[in-house]
Image 1 (cartoon, one colour):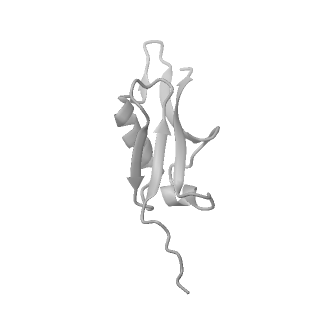
Image 2 (spheres, one colour):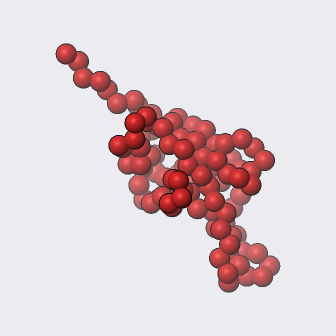
Image 3 (cartoon, rainbow, N blue to C red):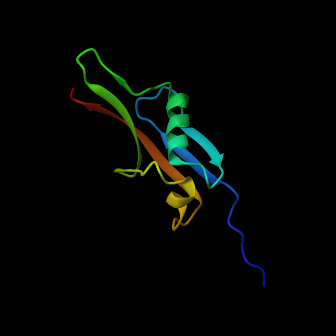
Length: 98
């Protein structure tokens, strides 16, 4: 009897409600950090963390459902235990009063 092998990549999709493009989609190596996913998605959507004229910080948070993800983890860490090797994440724009 042969053992099923885990897929060599994790399918990642990141949506952003304020984006004019479709979702960021990629098949990534399991060891890819969520920091990298966040950065790639931000580049895809053309957004950056910044400060507005009133001194408020504009920060983009990567979430799984309604919970922010731990950026120190990998896509494999987040995909472990899910039925499919797929992640559906969101990028949320937050304004932090300055």
